[in-house]
Image (tube, rainbow, N blue to C red; front, side, top):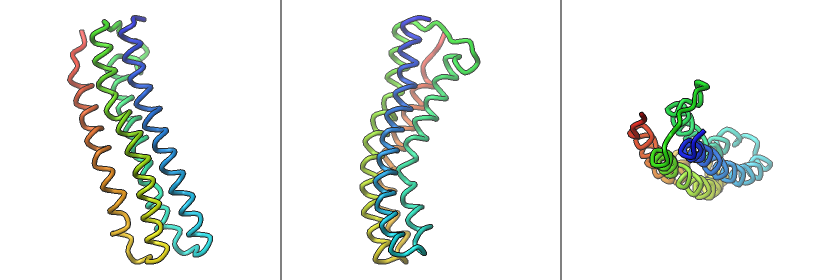
Length: 158
């Protein structure tokens, strides 16, 4: 296995690990807030659960980019390519947008979800408005997902 291949694998790993860590944190803090609301009013379970799940998407996005990268370099078929240093660095760089933005946006989306759950605690009929605040943070995760997918797919492999 070449150093370029190792760098490409590192990019895939970072996409999964960093975006997943952010999602775990975001879903976790939103879950704490949701648990408090449900302990007071169990009928709000479904609404607060929907909001709690929002920060989990970044982990899914990181996983998607990793699957695309691993598939492109042949790891998923069991025949990894021998990538040169430049190509390996490009693959690593292509995975970084979702890795880094996924980490940060999931944490901030979790915080916004906590606030949205607070809205639902007081005004359960305002689900659409409450979901809008954490959903706005999602925009940046989607943009980083798009750039990572385009970058990974745009790297020529020989």
